[in-house]
Image 1: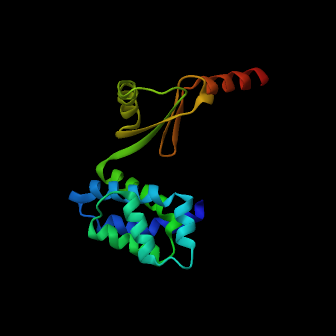
Image 2: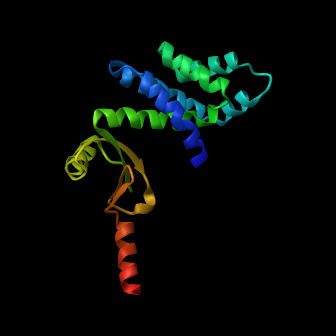
Length: 177
């Protein structure tokens, strides 16, 4: 995983430098769509097939992504394919999005909850979190049933764990100490 992240970083940084500020949000959506398509195992095996040309792979990816690509994003995808870096494309998309968010003063907050939570509940969670972390947060919510209750929030490398599972673990540690 670290190897792919190392491979992805220069591509994401180059795309970030090429992206005009006015178009960054549109480019993030396009690159994210390409990254999601690139995660598909069948696409990976098709791309690895020596009979498949780069143009065929490019066509399949752009059709599956179902987004109109800016010329620079299309060139970016062609470069990724020419250099055989399709496996790193999802990480490139994540890193590019992180760079754009950093420029805009926004960070991604991954909220793990034991149950599905509504948009209103997410908004209620984000208000104190934005004050605590001192920046605007964009929430991505995932259900993780083994938390039992509560939420665990990950912002960058910081974790705020208020789940029942974490509380039980802390009580267990205190009792065993």
